[in-house]
Structures are given as structure tokens and as C-alpha cells.
Length: 142
Image 1 (tube, one colour):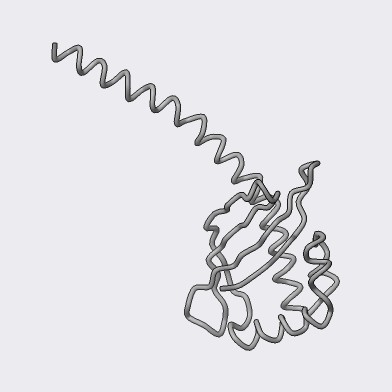
Image 2 (cartoon, rainbow, N blue to C red):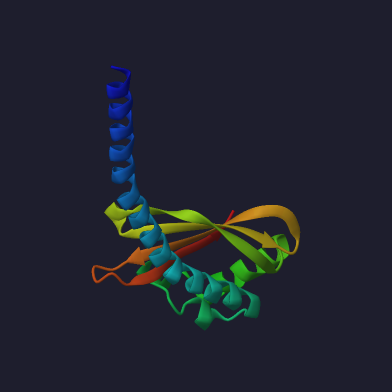
């Protein structure tokens, strides 16, 4: 009787493990795909802010950013970032959330900047086209 319960417990554990492993591998693949797009896009944005380069900042922009961000708004954003948190120093990946109903992926990093000892949340929003290409829909620091 005890052997039967133990065998059922082991069989149940293996079943759950087999269900979990493909999802985990799929999540790792999705994370790698998102990071391969998001990291270079964020690098471009942070470099553009450092160099005060509006054209580079808008390089990968989608329809939302193109409608909302002007040269004047960009200049104001750069001024505020440099005054409040300073220069970008480093970041660590935190993760992402998919907003499938709106074709958006929201990515988060923990970031460090020169004028604050507080960690900042760096947020990048990517819009996903029907063809599967990504453009920048938003950027923020919190």
C-alpha cells in the first residue's frame, strides 16, 4: 500500500515536471527574443539622451512616439533627466509584460544614474506589428 502511494506521488511529480519544462523553455526563448530587440533599442535611446540627439532618439520609433514626441519635448525630457538623475551608468534586466490586446510589450530594467543612489525603473514599450517587427512606442524612468 505504501509503495503504491509513493509510486503515484512520483508519477504525479514527473507529470507536473513534464508539463512545466516545455513552458519554461518557451518562456526562456520568448525572453531571449524580447531582449534581443529591447536591449539595442534601449541602448540607442540612452545614447541619444546622453548626446542630445533627437534623430537617434526617434530612430526606432513607432506611430505613438512619432505622434507624441517633438524636438522641443525631447529637449525638455533630456534636460529633466540630466537635472534629476544625471547620466546613465548601468542597468539590470527585470522582465517584461505582454499587452497582447494592444500589441505591446512593456520591458523593465533596474537602472543606476549618476545623481541618485536610488535605483530607477527604466521602462521601454515596444509595439509589435502584425508582421512581428518591433518599434518603440514609449520610454520612461520612475
